[in-house]
Amino acid sequence: MPVIEIKQLVKKFGKFTALDGVDFELDEGQVHAYLGPNGAGKTTTIRVLLGILRATSGSVSMFGKDAWKHSVELHKRLAYVPGEVNLWGNLTGGEVIDLMLSLRKPDKHHKERRELFLKRFELDPSKKCHTYSKGNRQKVALVAALASDAELFVFDEPSSGLDPLMEKVFQDIVLELKKDGKSVLLSSHILSEVEKLADKISIIRNGKIIQSGTMDEISKVAAGRSLEELFLSEYNGKEQ
Image (cartoon, one colour):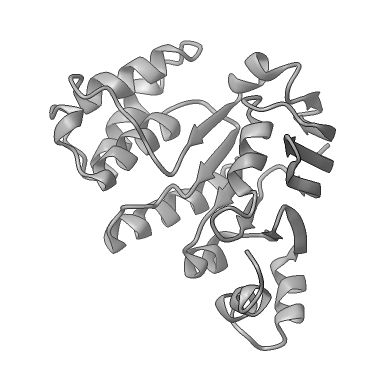
């Protein structure tokens, strides 16, 4: 059973069709990269998946359960990091992390993982959130997600704002998650990152999936080109 299964997903906002027949699957222990320019439909897909938006038609399931009907139950099994992290400015980073972890079921390893990822991301948890840079706000969200006991990690531009050293730390952690049998849905504009991490790739344009497959299958489509060259060829000169 796929961890995520999306079939013929359509999402309309009035007369505007944001998603038009989106299909893809994420299997256990895989990293599935979801690519596309801003406005292509990536974040809308993720919001439907998280039960924030309701699909107009089609089916969206996680762990075999409807993502809308069972959203509260499913959120206990996943962790989500958005590309734009808003925090409570008067709380410290550590307090925000602890608050987020307190919303999950008790786990004796939360504190241990919290300290591990604070160290790996070189984040000072004693500082107030209003003093943090964008990169440090991302680190707070990443530490809170990674310290959880989630089975599925949904990352929507998670390394936005991170410096190259911290991007490498994030990439190493994703590979470790995969090795541990965790599943990852990764939306990223950093195509070199995707090439290193992804087992499967789906490319979306104007709400439709235009390429999807394993890295080997995508490499055959690319015909010797890099993922970046393939991606740009799909969009260059085309209406966004």
